[in-house]
Every structure is written in structure tokens, then in C-alpha cells.
Length: 268
Ligand SMILES: O=C(O)[C@H](CS(=O)(=O)O)OP(=O)(O)O
Image (cartoon, rainbow, N blue to C red; front, top):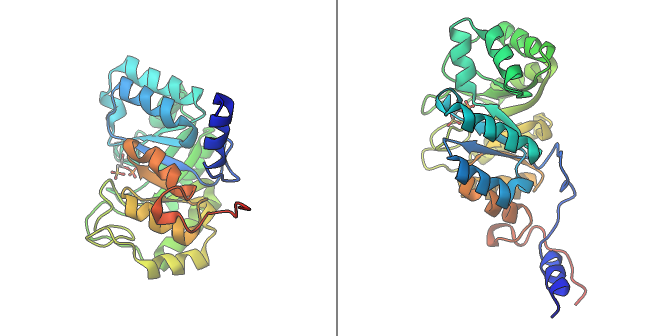
């Protein structure tokens, strides 16, 4: 086999998805960066940057990352057409210290175009949340909001989620995240073993346009379940750096869990 035929043979088996090209609005993958060193970050982007749409610098790590490394992470993300943004807790810290305007300015100076607005650890009245989203939009930031609380055992009802989702979208949020933290256990739509509450998902999917939701799914079994139920265009978040390329395999039916979903007739 000649080399060009070899690459063609691999490409033919790679599966496809219609939203392959960036910038994508569906089938997005959001990676949680919990403190990758620059080499690991570069490796990640080199190997699987094509499959990443968002990177979240989690837990306020941006504030304690050496400045030159933070700057390089931002620059590299842009090169790969990845939107890098800071985790919601960091916004909540600024909010609780009455420094929201400074926070918006800081993002603009860092050349970050996206912001996450959440109230996982603090309480923000619905009206204030609405105004904060509008304020961020006026500051030329694209907004991702998050619904959910950080405390273990917190599971929003379908009605709560739908109501806040609609309000956030009306205020100008591009996406709404379903909170599941880094563990994906005993929180949001997962039980203490990380199993998905299928009933909750079904009811939610009937009531909201799911292309605007990013489902946090840190565990591989959660990613597989969501793809099986909602399709490979589902937006998934809190993906560990080491799981990005295998998630893309899942989306394309190249892994046993989703094999039967996306196979095309070969004609043989
Ligand atoms: O970075 C954060 O603030 C958290 C981290 S985790 O997802 O809860 O582990 O994320 P966020 O979803 O942005 O609140």
C-alpha cells in the first residue's frame, strides 16, 4: 500500500460528523484544565486541538499560574481556535467582593472573549443574574452561564432548570452549563455512583433546545450515555485532558459504546 493510500484508508475508517469544521456551535467539547503545565497543554493542543472548542481554567488557577505561562496558554488557544475562559467560581469570588466591573476589564485585557457566570457557591438573586449577563454582553463578552450548586447532593428539578435556562438565554447567554463538578458524582443529574438520571434528562430534553446546553460529563460512561441519548452533536464539558481524543472516538462511533449508533453501510 502506498503512503497516500494508507492515509486515505485511515480517513475512510475515521467516521465523520457534519459539524467537523471550527468554529462549531454544536458538538462542542469543553476541557477542564486543572493546572496543566505548558508542555502538557501544548501536547494536548497538538494532538487534539481540532476536537476542542472551549478550555476552562478551573478553580481560579488563572490567578496563581505564572503570568508568562497564562499568556502563552491564551495565545496557543487562539492559534487553535479554542475559546479559553475562566471557571465560574473565579467570577463568583469577584462578584462577592463587588469587583465585577474590574473582572470584566481584566478579561478584556487578557484578551479573553468568554465569561462564565454562575452561582454555585454564592447566592445571586434571579434579577441580578439577569442584569449581570446583560452587563457582560455590553462589555462585549460572550456568556456561558451555569445552573447548579457545588454542594454534594444538590439536584435541580426540571422546572428549576428550565426556568433559569430560559431566563439566562433571554438575557443573552450563548450556552448554559449543567453543573456536575469535576467528579460527576452525587450532583446535578448524576447519582452518588455517577449514573445519569435518565428520567430527568428525558424531561429536560423535551422542554429546552439542547443545542444551547453544555452538559458537564467528566466520566467516560456519562459521555457515552449522553451521546447515545442526545446524539454525537451534544455539547460536553469538564472533559479531562487525557479523555479528549477518546471522546472524539465516541462521537464518531469508533468505540464499542457507540459503535452501533454511527455506522454507515460500506457497500461491501
Ligand atoms: O472552576 C470552577 O469554578 C469550577 C470547577 S468544577 O467544574 O466545579 O470542578 O467550574 P465551574 O463549572 O466553572 O463552576
